[in-house]
Amino acid sequence: MSACPRVAYFCMEYGLDPAFPIYAGGLGILAGDHMKSVGDLRVPLTGIGLLWDEGYTRQVLGKGGALEDQYPKTARDAVRRVDARVEVTIKGKKVPLRAWKVERYVTSDLYLLEPEREGDRWITQRLYGGGTEDRLAQEIVLGVGGVRLIDELGIDADVYHFNEGHAVFAGLELLRSGKFGGTSLAQKVAKLKKHIVFTTHTPVPAGNEVHGLDIMRTMDADCGFSDKDLATIGGDPFSMTVAGLRLARIANGVAELHGETARAMWKDVKGAAPILSITNGVHVPTWQDARIRAALVPDKKRVVQDAQLWEAHQTMKQELIAEIEKRNKVKLSLDKLLIGFARRAATYKRADLIISDDKALKKLLDQGVQIVYSGKAHPKDTGGKALIGKIVEATKKYKKHVVFLENYDMTLGALLTRGTDIWLNNPRRPLEASGTSGMKAAMNGVPNLSILDGWWPEGCQHGVTGWKIGDPDPKDDALHEKDTARIDTRDRTLLFKALDKDVLPAFGNRAKWVNIMRASIEMSEWQFSSDRMIEDYVAKIYRPSSGR
Ligand SMILES: *Cc1c(COP(=O)(O)O)cnc(C)c1O
Image 1 (spheres, rainbow, N blue to C red):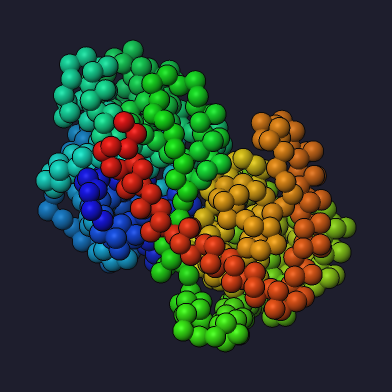
Image 2: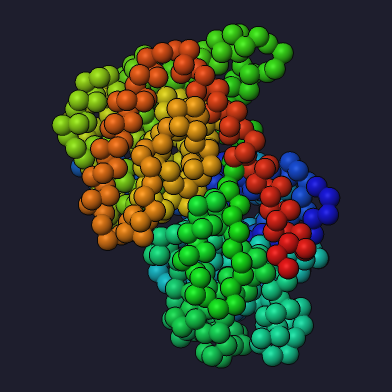
């Protein structure tokens, strides 16, 4: 793509392939798809990340039914050492770093850093593991180490893209190095700003990282900033999101609605970059099954396409059913509606919404509905683990109808978004920033049934491309944390109503259903592809004229 300046892209995690688990969830998958599309479209962008020694948890159900976290070593057959060394200072100690280049899965340039010495490897041991000091050490390696690596590799980056606040140390390093000039802090920031863009990903306040100034300074001992300077950049305590917004020329949320939410959330931050919306997308060759593409090639009659589309879907559903039988010893039916729900076990996503009213659930299951779940909780998130516990209870009670697949990863993500009949999403609006799994489902002919949150207000034509669960009441968007009981009860009623009145009747009519599958694919293939997303990033964010 022409006229795009050189970009250096920073992210803590990359979801490239199930065999290379240096990702935890949506943020990583998005970054992986970003790198894949950048390669396909030949955008001059270099990615920087960390080589996690053990990656994220492999989470399984133990004998007693409790979740166990396992940490297998990350295989290194997809990376090659490069001849580039840099050094950072962490807690006053020099930490030499080495770099690896990812050789598989992407055609773009992606470098991963790790400490050279065994004794410093605690820093990159586990993605999102450890406490505050570990987190800050990781972010120093990513940000400070990343900026130095870009220089060491001789890459003349003009734009530095911080994908989430984890990369803010890169901004501190660029200020410290004086790379873009200026004498006073205000001048330096003004000059630096022209080169930084920032993507924020979470409307959940707790998801926005904050640290005391003292620990920021202890960890980043060659910091070079006074407390006053640090507070000017990120506030006191230091907020990574506030700093990202203040250091950037332009920022973005990851769906139209999320952009709005983020603008409201950060409106009082003085000196913040304007926040646009660039809706996420997924890498079509990775996430759309080739059989779906084959069914819909244009030189066939519509009836032939429809027949092949249905055939392809049934085959993929059968593959999922076979995998469930292999893993869980439960045989689901090919003919009955199969609802899919797979996500991180964050409470706002309400995985338990549909199973919390036993009478309504029983009635639904008696109508032949089946539900397949998957999910992972952060190893320290007891609330998330309890949520999975609740699902596991439901699978015991309704053995033939409700199943839970352990260790949600890219393999299951792909299998489930191809092989289910509908994709359910019922977060507390507006807390789902985007939600890319629904896009994967949509482009495989698995229509979404979802609250109008994240990307879905942009993709939903009710009854045509899928279904909404009720209409949002903007008043409630502000109340989602105070008034959860009422909102949850209301949304649950609306969910059962949508299943009963909209989804089940449509599923009973093959011709109608196939039309919805088609509309879902046509709606999503381009609009929610990472190619479209990259074109937007180039046009609206990366180009130097944008946001000035
Ligand atoms: C796509 C995907 C996600 C992100 O999906 P959400 O809809 O944002 O929950 C997370 N984890 C895996 C393994 C995925 O494949």
